Length: 140
Image (cartoon, rainbow, N blue to C red; front, top):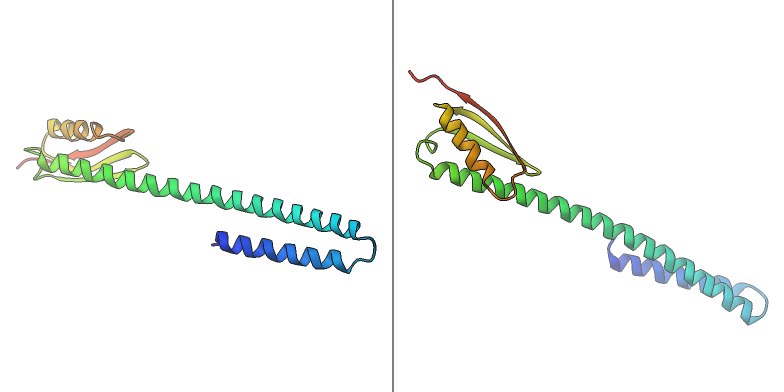
């Protein structure tokens, strides 16, 4: 990954090369100065464009991390709610969250418990949708 320090080093290198190139040209000092200014401006524009692109990538990665943390937080809160609920705590219920969409899987002993697990999940802040894939197991 290219850091801001590397961008600065690249920019300074371009400025030096541009300056040396302009100094090697025969002609009045004004022409050399204009070429140096043009080189500096082009280098500055390229550095700014690259910095903008890196900034966008960092923002995208930050958003992905935030979504992952939010999903983990949602999953943890739902598991805690299910564990605290009488009748659900002893059941085999798995909770997975991806971008705010919660999937419940496993088995429950009654439709009422399945509905209760779904309702508890839907009540957690950040949940966009609950996919209830819980299966009723037969009681022997």
